[in-house]
Every structure is written in structure tokens, then in C-alpha cells.
Length: 119
Image: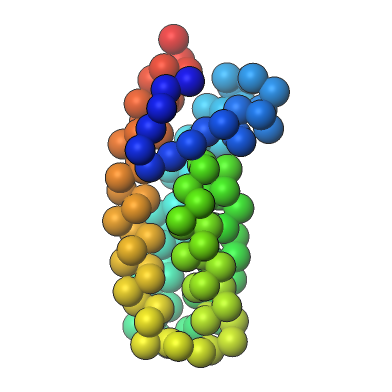
């Protein structure tokens, strides 16, 4: 397994018991669903639907954990807390933007890993 800057797939590899198909499925699902989740959170900021931001962040926390993106797991926890408790709402948009940028960087590495898994 390659060494990456933004992701660490050791946990996912352990979870998959070395199954390349399982890893491909989880990575593909992450790439497919995460941008929509982040976009939905941005929409929720505009409508001030803090509960939904918290709920989406809760779901993303596990996904980021699978990809070894520990800093985004922490951001997800903060967003979950801020959203579900409607506190520090002025900080939510910036945290979502931070998550979006981290995802874009990670996506490149994940696509490289998918190519390696297919060989």
C-alpha cells in the first residue's frame, strides 16, 4: 500500500481483511457520496438548518475515519456538535470549506489507490 499525504488506508485495509474488492467498494462509495454531503451542508448553512449540518457531519465522521483522514474526523465532530446544538454557527461555513478542500486533496490520492487496487 502506497504512502499518501492526505489519506491513510491502513484502517480500511485491516477492516477489509485484505479484500481489494471491499476496499474498492468503500473508496468508490466515499468518492461518490462525500461531495454531495459537503454540498448539502453548504446549502444547510444558507437555510440555517443547523440540525441537518450536524446530522450529515455525524455520518461523514465514519467515512473520514475509514479513509484515515483524522483531521477531518475532528472537523466532523466539531461540525456535529455545532450543528446539533446550534452553537458557534458563525464558524460552521469555514469548517465546511476546510472539509471541502481536504476532500479534494484526498480524492486525488484515493483515485490513485483505486487504480492500484484494480491491478
